Length: 365
Image (cartoon, one colour):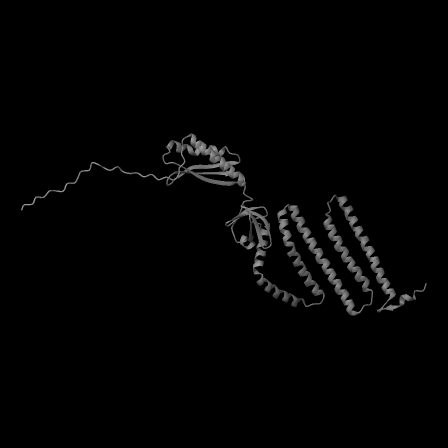
């Protein structure tokens, strides 16, 4: 068989060199696909023997990235056997570095995201996982920025000048977006320190509502009256926040007053009467009831008890039952509640006062 045509040269390479490059590409692709199938089947067998639950996500991440790197390496190896023009050879090397860097950044980003999500799922903290989803774009941006610097360094650029330019540009952006960056750092503070989470009922100053959304710049509350309250994260981290989610019991203090004309015997039985009424309620712990002070028009009692729940509706239902029971008990014992009154005392006048008589004077003419 005459193979002299293989020695013919085209663009500085013989046909035999081109044939070798094609053979390397084909054989390499076949080997890579076979290697991929072998590795996946080995991992499945290992998982079955050790009875370990192998997450398909991590298998997919590793296999895809590894196969892509092998493909890039196979193409570079095949083309490397050819005699190329220096400019073309440099372009091939640059494209190989770019492709490898992109694949590497994607691999690191996916592995970092998978590791953090797996850790949060093991902790069972779904709310923190939801908050972390908003941070992923920032994490990816940081990884891509690092990858870009690494790529420029491998492509022969002056990294010191690039970093200096990025530093000056970063300062300019920071000054221009100072408000946004402040809210962003406040968001990090909320996510990491967690003064509240999704679904928490909070009070911030004059605003009351349930947390429905925690964003990078703002947090949204659903108020009791139904409207949505949008607050900047900076305002939240700079305010005193009252969070009712972790409240196990609610301390209730209320007072009532009776008339000054109430007999001493009835005044003495009122604390015990109120104690019996409160102790009879469910999920309630009585604390104290005292004749506290003398008011302008009433004798005042202060009562304290605990509702063993954070449910506001349960507290209101319990307080209503207590109020009705006290009203009925006072009615049965003729104890009257005080209300604002004014009593005027008028001292009686003496109607038989002596009449003043002017002295009579005589005049002699």
